[in-house]
Image (cartoon, rainbow, N blue to C red; front, side, top):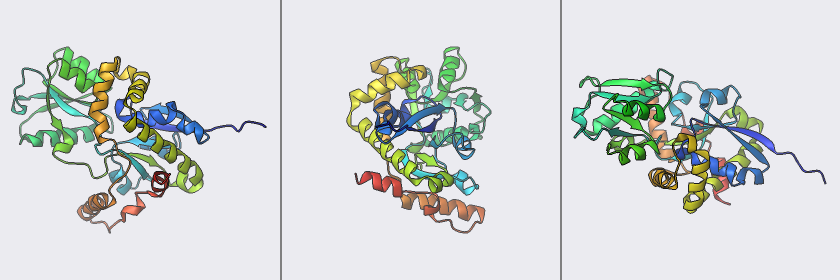
Length: 300
């Protein structure tokens, strides 16, 4: 009997970071293959590439604002209750956030740069600081956390917003953790898994199979620490996860916030607030959140 060819699906992830390990697990542990899918991960891609048809599924920060801007995107599931693992790490000589004068943020001058400024603004608000009023200099770094860390090592900047594992690497060097954005402003949707409405309409069986494999990947990561650390060491090595100790530190930072489900009531409230601010008619959360595939997978 002729073996059936697997269907290739391209999954975008911003970077090979521990934050996205549930996606890596779906590929590495064969959960996608068991559903007849060949998973290919494409880094440094996102919603725009998904809309253009270059990737089938996208992962990343909250997308409901882009949806309200007119982008054809639907959220299928959550990855984390946090939009990122970024924390503000300050040099050992910085005793408090009030001493900060120059902070490095990821994103360079690209389209995500403003989102990372907002993230920093919220972290500073934890300490009663206003980014603009305090005249704190921000510097967008082309690349991401490795490049931020390299600049800190060269003596540039007082602090940087770093994600796992770079926040652990900084902590081991004596840097001080000044907080995460969610300590001030929790995300209504967290980071998510997304597809285009065209993909959902054209091939619901594909979406169903993918979400089922993703759920199994997430459950694996939550239940099997040692196996998940092995996956991080393979997929996240170029992102600084070079030892089991660093991998375990990254796991301990991101795993407590991994989750599959989005609270529709909380997300709906956020969407309606934006609609009101923009003078738009109310938009039902169900036009953005397509939860039926996840609900079906969770019943298995």
